[in-house]
Image (cartoon, rainbow, N blue to C red; front, side, top):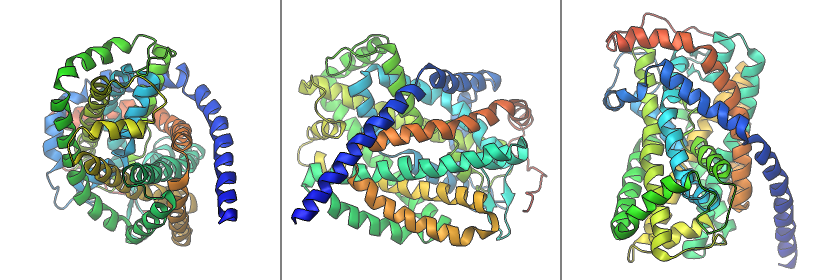
Length: 473
């Protein structure tokens, strides 16, 4: 037992040193240049595409409409559910709470604004994903920014780099962060050892991912609506409990977005810190501009690229403008109601304190929400990682896929025992490098995106079936 204790101590010291190094990298990456690039792209596409956000209700209707006879592997709703499974994760709970603690309540406003503007970017991503998707030798549909960069812009090196960073992001943001959140939640709620959780979670993930895309999509299609409803209802309950503090919370969110005041009472970097944490957590949460969602969107059965583009844009709405917004309101109003004025308490404990306001059930609801959010995200990112491997390796990808899945299952265990701050910092770093080539492709292909949008959407031809055949590799 003493050897085991020494080993755990050494592992923790290594993680602490690694976290300091990666935090320094993040401080540089998430400066004004990246914030300008990401928000600038969201704004640029919003205006060039004449505010595609205004078609939200039409897009929601399309998301539950089956395009029978269309090429693809899964329905538009299944593709959306898998995309949401990858997006709606612990970033919607712990990520938002962390942003509030460090960046102040104003980070919620920047997270919300990133989501609203990001709907245009998610729309553009979905459109070009369908436009440049391919059919592989095994008959499966493949697509995403790597194929857009390769086929649409003839940038094979950028396509390969995107896939490499997708793999890094899949392990960090898609796996480590989620497994860690589950283990921390179970430890805080039921005092379950993180190593016990890691073993059980590893087994569950392994049991699902070896069924491939259809297995993942089936689980996500059933799990995502269930977990979203449970979480939203519980948050609304908390907002009623904290009703007397809700108005003050909203004022504080807008006011502190431009003032150097953190929620814990300490002075921070003002607008810069609030922007940094609001925008970065927004990107990690809704993934607009990151390029992950188009990978699954390319597999959707759809009549034309614009229909799927509209459906894709709804994922950002549900993720950020609904889930993240109410999480932010719950966090700020609960901290005001409970008189929490220090930053020593972790974001996970803040949410636990908030949910304890619901008698008897609160702690259990939060634990279930954390588990389902995180577990579905792990499954969604499995698919993204596999498609990146498939692109890099080509026809030899079958053996590589099995190796990837084995590494993935092992990584679930590793992530569950890593410190929370470290896994979030790794995810933030990987997200930057994954987003840059994708944003570049969207800017370069804006004239094409606008042309397709004009034909199918602005000229009211959404029911028209595209006559373009999916090329085979």
